[in-house]
Length: 262
Image 1 (cartoon, helix red, strand yellow):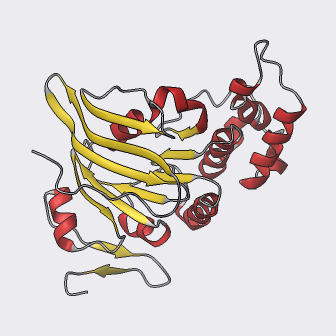
Image 2 (cartoon, rainbow, N blue to C red):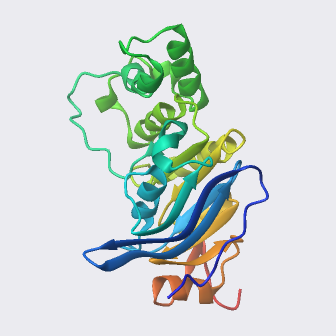
């Protein structure tokens, strides 16, 4: 069965990502089925869908970490493995020893390994890029702090800085607010919204209502792509994606349920 929707090329700018009829199977079972998706420069795309719906797999296909069983993938006009140096990635789980003595500055500099040359020695350009990336996420004043001492929100900002320091054209984030205090999530989403002026941003999240406030477009994924485009989602689209009725909770000063008659 083909995907219910074949998305059109974004008009936001140059095409950054293109997937044509992409299938991924594990032991013969489809995990992604007939995916057609394009992402343009300057797009801020939110990807939502249930657990096991293929969201992380889709990101790994774009990164070139998973090769599709069928279909083609292009990132910046090339196979993804040849464009990986222009992709920033913040994975879903960042497990590390919080007692390990590594500083914020050292972690962000790791993102410049691809620029550091054969001897892996960081030069002035690398240090300047690290400082600018930390300043962008407003963590420069924490550069000497040990990573294990950071809060969840601060940690995610540093990991974004590590992704930004490579000067990517595409930033992929897999559930980046999972460990962020709810009070800081608005500020975090606003940071991502500013980054789209420099690159395409793709955000995987379970927080449907919060994401819909900040992103420009939404893709609904559950093995197939049920929607890609307007962030004004109908109950029918959500029910098709999640295979059950869904109610959205609107965020703001007075949170409320968004019911069908709305």
